[in-house]
Image 1 (cartoon, one colour):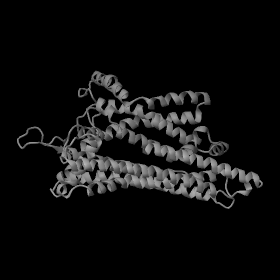
Image 2 (cartoon, rainbow, N blue to C red):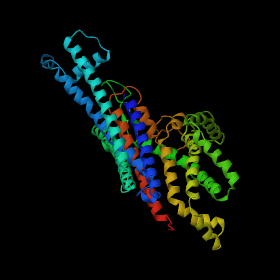
Image 3 (cartoon, rainbow, N blue to C red):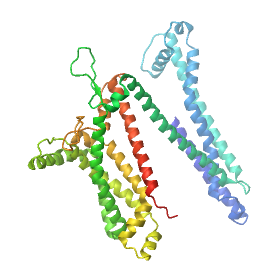
Length: 459
């Protein structure tokens, strides 16, 4: 019903736009042109469409969030007092009524049959009233919008005010969503820290989240030290960025400053193909080709402690995966630097290399750093390659040839399967998520400080 109603509202709004625009054009043509009107005809059309759709959509929104509680109150008011006085949960009774009304449950109780019939009647009545009222309101809006069209109507300021309000609402929703996510993680993390001390989590050197279900259970003592996961995450991310940052940035400089248009049109799409490969394919390649190759090469030169799954294999492949992000974003930023800056430096006698180092890159620094931050976030958040190439062992080591794990991988493993939400094992995932948020926030803060210190502004 709602989908059909939305389609009809959109059709009526389009009609309002067309009718109002044509009316404005006719008024302009009959009175010497567009100078007769305050705004262009399209703004009159948009204002009429807004007047047609906005009130109906607002009422539909209010109806959607309030109708359920109204219908529940009306249905429960018809339930006999003898049923409600038994101490039974009202929500459970209402669920039974809904199940009988939908045909899921069969009953012989007369009050339940009557209540389900009442529930169905209210649903149908509400849908009919909503449908008729909103269509009538939209048609009234269409007529009102059509009559509004005139030379004194300031259509463009009204449309722009509505659009500014819409953009403001979108921004507020985005901010509230962010706060909601952070608070939901924070509250669950606080529950975890009420069970496991914060110092044990932040400074613990062992990670073994298996907790004992019985007092006599062996091998499930539970250790929630965060340090092995942090070192594993930073090690793999560092290896990945050591590959992706220089190669991606250099390729972006070449494509933006040195490559001919023909070479650029061929190389850039080919480079970006890497971004379209699924991460599981990278994981297969890392596990089946790169990891054995690293192990055999290390063994050949005398390094004994080489694991079949290593941080080096995961980091190398992750770096290859991230190269297109760094290259593409850096290329866009570098090409956006005004050509006048290059021409000015070259006219003063600087070589092309000196122009790039002293003029282009400092001007593009904020965008380049932003691209590198996105790449770091991608490296920190990658899970599939780490699982397949680096393993799940939370080892506290600086040896890239050993198996390690990352924060995101452990979050996934902690939330897989049927888990009790009150156990430290499950709540540890939220503590890890909060820690990851703090680490990412710190990286952003450092990047902003770097940009503020070294950025060159030319305008």
